[in-house]
Image (cartoon, rainbow, N blue to C red):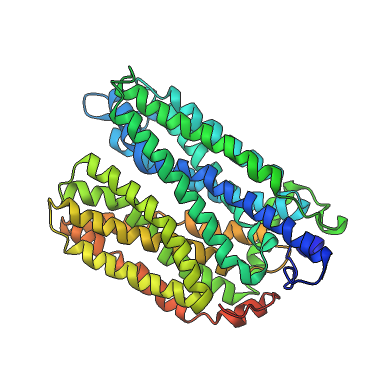
Length: 462
């Protein structure tokens, strides 16, 4: 099988069959190391910008622009100042859903994935760096830059994930994917420590609190752009034959329809995507709502919440690597199923967590960190086995859409549960349904048969 046309490395690519195989193996390792660095580059956006700083800061800017009733009026539409941030995130996800299939189709048709990855990465990094100018009452500027940065991140991750089946043999993918997540969590923790030093000691640096936050936001964009150079130098494009890559990228919508039609021919791959959609929505909602639960229900201060986020980042590195080793012994599917059982136990523990007890909140954060990285990394590597050869970017765009495109569902359930019960404990418990249904659906997917149906070699363990 010619890997230049399929995009997949041969199953025996790392076998000790002579000097040529040794050279190919060294080249593959070099690409893998470069690939890890995109996680290292962009994860600081997710951690420092989206999780910690931009939500509260954009809300404060919107409140400064609000009328006496607490409303701002973009395009003449009355919007509560406190809703600007979630609305901007939602708008970014809609934009991402529109762009990801087009980028994936263009990459697969042309065989030139790297220029598209560079474009998405630097648009996102530039928009993030531009958040330095978010000040005064410029909430529309902040919302616009957030929409662009968040959508660009989603597009770049779809393109980045599509490299996995090209740079790793089937039996390597669990470990390679786990190392990528570990690199991302490492950079997120490192930059968050630096940000916290600057933020908490801003007066000693001669900065106002606002200036410190803006520097933290902008520096995440600079970090993202700087370290993106590494994967762009080390990853390589696989050229497609002229007959497959000749059509213009403008046919992206036609390709999207063709991709959706093609995916119906792989119902087991679709079944995995549905399971992933459910349990990953639960994961993302726990992460995004944990700070609200901690502050509103448990009465914890901001320092405790930020430190807990840092703890999650640090332990997620160990979790991603540790679960990668478990997958080598027991298979990715069994390890993911075990992680979903642990997520359910975490939610149960959160329901009974005592208020005003930071130690127990830290213990919960530690548990989340240990299970978070592994469940995400192994889901990515398992899906890579289910993608038909030559359609990596298209299918990973669908994978990323299942992550981003319906990520409003978990928060909606969380919000409705709180609205009906008035209890954040009941709201956090309501998320169990995502993990339970995801567990049941994933358990029913015959992954070995799914890999074979996609036309890929079946690894020894899945």
